[in-house]
Image (tube, rainbow, N blue to C red; front, top):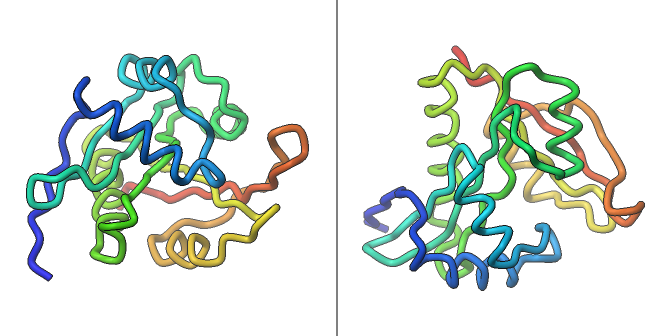
Length: 168
């Protein structure tokens, strides 16, 4: 499949698409409304849209250490690492899955980390209520290792906290 992938900064005009896409997968993401999207536009280290042949196909949000961000997972990583990038979410539109966009976005983050001298990229994978086997396999393939687990959202969700060394 010959597709042209473009990763670019999110624009105001993208926000309805981002919010709708987030809502489709909200069961494995945290909810996002317009105010939170605006917060990410102002605060995130990276807030990008990926396009395939000129169409939006997904998005990426990455936070850096030192942000005023209340995510339980981000806070956990903040207590473990002095300098890191936290992949808050990578969401791919179901119409564009299985063509390499997830890998492309992770590699983009790894390159960004290397270019900016950040040695650790972090993420999490759900364990409970649903063990996300495909995500575990993907993260392992991408070079992540489990560095901890925690229960979040008042005990409703258990996550595997993952880290990747971005400097070669």
